[in-house]
Length: 501
Image (cartoon, rainbow, N blue to C red; front, side, top):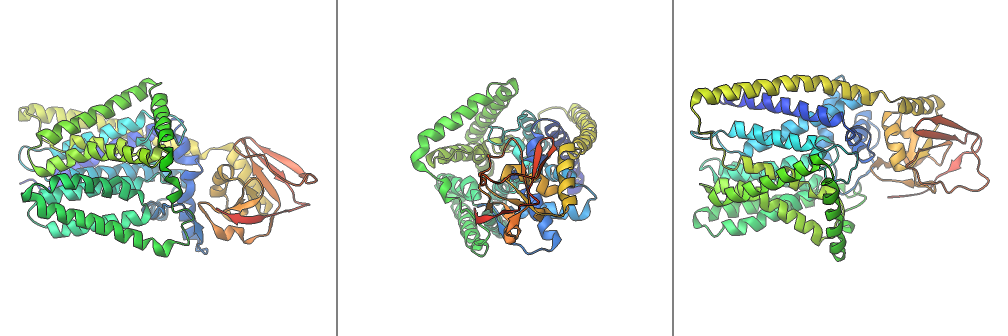
């Protein structure tokens, strides 16, 4: 019998090549803005730096705590001799590899007539291709696959959802270790809900709805009830575990739900879809997505065992449930619909039957395809190095950070303006987040920054809202740094107003 590592290693190697190709392509497009420079995308890097600095931690977070993402980024920072942009790219590669691992779990055990490794590679490759079709810098475009490459837009939750489906499959597909697998599902649910309540909307609720269909099959009743109990218990425990973090959670997310706006929600998401269809790559991506959903429905009908049917149903029913739920709650953020990007690829691994070809031609085709992927992956690694280097070579950023570092003073800037310079300063506390009235803006930042009473310069750019300062307040001078301008008030420091989230 072939040893497990011998069978699995080629899959991981090919998945690594796919990850390098995907990240290199996205990082070389305007989508790199979300990987390296977007205000939201920098929170994990800022939090990681804050943790390693040993400074007091009093962070104002959103409803998402980014615990797994921060742990990964901090670990990479501790072991890799890379700058922050290199760490972003490394984190993106690890995110795709972790997704492959979760997909491989969902593909089931290897046995005669099945090729779960090959189909898992195919699934992550299709996902990578979808990510590579996404080329805009917009954080609210219907370009959802590439969000898995960021440290902020729920990459850990994506992996947890696929992992949960995989654990469910293994319970239905095995007569051994079911208790351990069930406990593992509960643990994943607890930790995932703790860090991001969206896990409940993306997995727990859809899984509960699907389970009611499966529970009518007597042979599966005990296992389905056990799985559902583990998922519900874990999710409930996760919400309880959030209580100690209450001081960090500046927004519980409850305000995002506005059911009365469901019509506007339909219009918003329809507009995003229409905009995506304006490019050939967008059309190709949407057609691929619908094809995968159709395959999931077909395999739900033709599945030859309950475990395969569970994965097949999850590949289309979960995304549909998430979209309907997002509309019913009146949401207006594309990222809430991420399951429509990553779950449909599970239709490829629901019933991973080996291709019916003679052994020799099948091996030849596999070797040629693997060689091509590995060669392109090597090229992708080179492109990725270049992309990370180019992201670091930002003369405007170098100008503004050098001036602030040299000044030894503390200034302020608005959220979308200040985040990037703040991350790259020798001391991030030198640039405080404020609103346009100079009130402290405690959002995705350490609140210890607001211990100061005034600031002696302001940083602004085209994303800044016009300042509301006293009419008699005039800067001593203005330093131009390309994208950014620094308004120097060294002779007349500006007082900070009250802090809000």
